[in-house]
Length: 258
Image 1: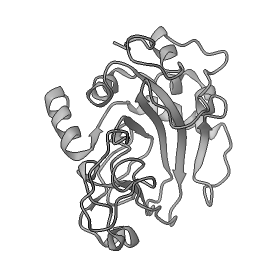
Image 2: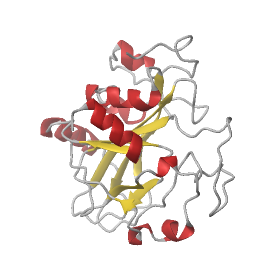
Image 3: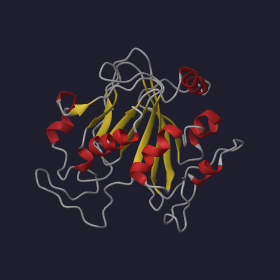
Image 4: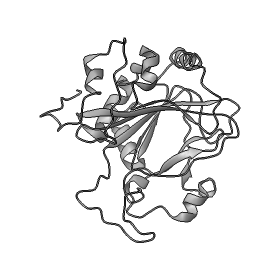
């Protein structure tokens, strides 16, 4: 899928977008090798690795991780949702082995967010002071994911919902026809709004799931008071350095990335 208008439409309607073949097999192999070099524990209770804010996270493991920060195949798509001025807010990796259970469905913004006052079954009107968008995640898949294996799952279009997620869907998403596990082979990128109801499906693949999550937000917003640090000893481009800036008003105090 390369037509920007089609990508814009699908991202707006679905709340997520899968872009295949962003990374070639050599790039995927290099990233996986650098992760192998870290000698991480076998995935179990802990499914995350290389998290930040808390230093530079996995960005410190090599320039190939930093090259994903502003990969040309994702920047125009991020621009759809975040405009010209946005920043890197958080990063972490996820890995799973066969038999690991699903995670819970959730949304960080919108009617189903933890801070929402929406009541089950009642229409919810958003107040002007509430955040309903502004955060987008780019998940880089370093292994095949999809209905056969597991991985990222979501309820398409739920980022626009004015109703809280019903308990029966939250309790058994694997039995709900509205929950989608999109095909996303190794080398693909999944972009999704944090307002989308999403989660992690149980992992049934014989191979290990490996994904790198880069979380971006509009320039004047932040998830936490802590910041992702720039990696030491790795040269970043001018645009990549902008992504590490402190939150600030777009254009006046935070420059355009474009």
